[in-house]
Length: 236
Image (cartoon, rainbow, N blue to C red; front, top):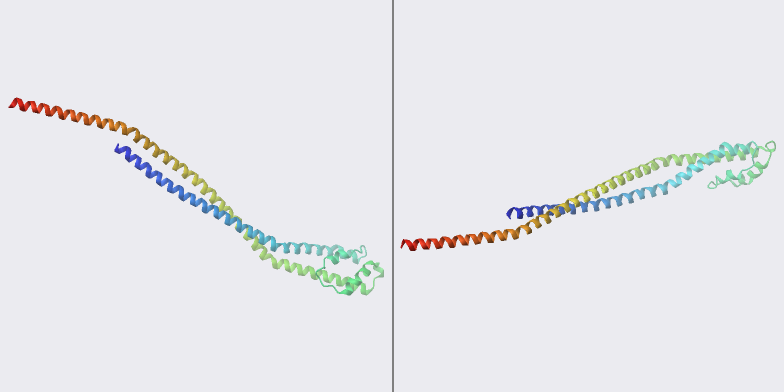
């Protein structure tokens, strides 16, 4: 019986330790889940910052491309008289304060045949070219100056994504470890139940054996007492 009670005590101690490990792993999983949430929020903030701040950069690059096209194709076509479509060029300069004389003279200049243009018309077209080049240079500087900050935002997103990947992997591992410790705890509980069952089944047999032992001891004692008494009687 002592061995069974000792086995039960050991099983109960093992179950207690297993339950403590489960509690610790459950806490670790909760912490890991929190870390994943924090990492997702950080990544979202970085992505929003890139979306908001890089939007202007994307627009600047698009306008730079359009102005380069105007300088390479649209304006030369106007100058050589193969096109009189100047409005598209002016639309690229909506944020530029153009001289009133330029905007009023340009339609007349563009509508004239090349042979009919005066020195003033040439000056109008040269001024338009100069404004386009100035705007192109302005955009190029803006794009160049914004480059480092844009690169930093990209790096921030990559770092945030890496943190999220690590947090997700840690959370997955914590979940696996919790499942494993729960299986171990279940096995420990089953061992306790088995030890309890063995002790319960043994106790009736132990009680019966004890009763039989006590009865035999009593019978032996009675027999001894009787025989001793007879011997003493004969000896007297």
